[in-house]
Length: 248
Length: 248
Image (cartoon, rainbow over all chains, first blue to last red):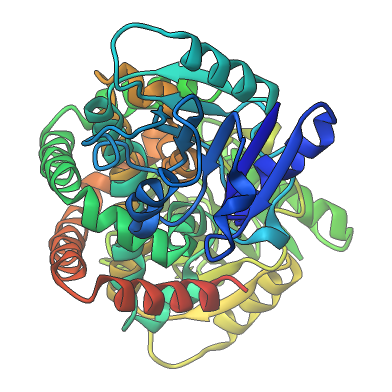
């Protein structure tokens, strides 16, 4: 079986390295500027490019892969890539793995070990292609989670994109307070770690998922108001129990 | 020199253990329900009790320590303890150290190593008592930061109390979203770690520093709006640089 990877950053590089480690596949890795003829004959292709260029690359692939080829992307948003169909079998996906670092030099084969890898199939019926992709993803070490693009993007706003912009706003808010900067310690450090994220990717997410982020921020403002209104200690205790359950 | 510690939780316990380790002081540690006569003759007393009972204990101490005794508290807020003077030398302070755990069993002598320890003197002039307290705090391993109660409480809202209630609201917001709970990973985990804080202490802080927290939340809403308005990638890059500088 021949597998292609387009885009050899943190995610693409880690897929490439892990597939090579498995030793049972012919693996071709190219950067997005390379010659796509190397992808001819691939059974499965992972498109691991920045969100802003992924649609263009999915179009371009139509000239290079067969109609039997399975293609997946790894974009952090699934709605915008799920709007059209292609000549090949396109199955959008999103590996929920990453580090603060980016690029080939930061990639490593164990990146997906134990991580969730979301699949948002375009068809309701599970077909052979989806099963084949799932098997390969499991070989990469990840757990499959199946949902819709809409539910995925809503959840991503709640657990990832909103926390990111909040981390940034928390930092921005102490920009002119020298004492706060001096005193900031581990609590502030952890709460704002997401502000170190790749800003290109963050920019794409804020642009493409703005509506869900704004809905989430409105809901957060409501939660804050009700939290501070009354029964704070009780509510805090319940939230603490939920947070403990989330990350055992 | 005789040193007393009232309240043997995480902070008081760690002060007690570190002072014992130093081996050069007579150290007396009592819980807040114990007999305070044990504190007679102390040169310095650390009051390490929950904020909600600290004022009462500062009052009670007047019957047990001398007018030469130096007393400090370790409350996370400094405004509310700075409103009256006592028969002894009272110098409010706040060690900026802690872990997710609380109680004597979690305390350890190295807790203050490299941490900031804020002092908010009631008098402008630096006197011998303040110098003596500073020397002892430095022996505990901490760095002295001197400011006013007002500036302290404002900074604490920005770097600690607001991040805490936001962490709680972020968790509350995914309470009914099973997919979000399944997909939440390291980014969400770090951003919401403060929701694991001691809820009694959190309750005191929210009650006693509500005004500063609300001002900070308003400012945050403004930062969020302007961040999402335009030039997001540029702003994100500047914030990332600030965040990197804060925690080298």
